[in-house]
Image (cartoon, rainbow, N blue to C red; front, side, top):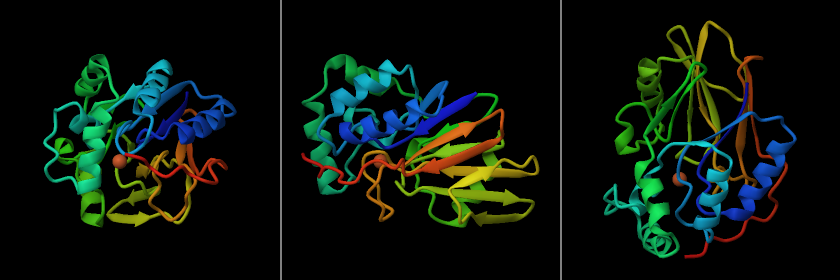
Length: 224
Ligand SMILES: [Fe+2]
């Protein structure tokens, strides 16, 4: 099974097209969206429709729940609050209901997925410190956990008591280790690389890679 795993589209339709075009060359069987389909970008409705059309497994991001009224967004910074309010005006009631129903986690035989961390996923913590990663490793019931939220792609590996950040954007899954994989952001990268980021996980081959997708050279400026 080859999974196309992506996150944080944030209504950036152009970036989503680039990622999906890339995925078409990768023989993807199933798509997994790790949340924040909407918020910030100019095309929340179009992105939502397209992702639903993929029959992607979708989990909730903080912006998805804020827009749908399920999360209090008082703590959001001003531009994010304005984006939530603006996005609501672009969505139909059925879209809001879809976002409202999104679950916080997904788990199958191959991996577990969450937007932020496995610790209190409803509070959408960022995985910033090694202690955050250790908490999620402790809660993992699978060998691999995919996350988004920070918009920074990263692979963290636990080997015995040791937890390290990989310097690579690919990994061969070793039976002895556990992996937290941040797939980065499709629509609003925050790692200094303006190209969209996404992940391919080949469960049968025990291999994954994150790519900047050779794609988006000039990301559109978010509009509110
Ligand atoms: Fe996000």
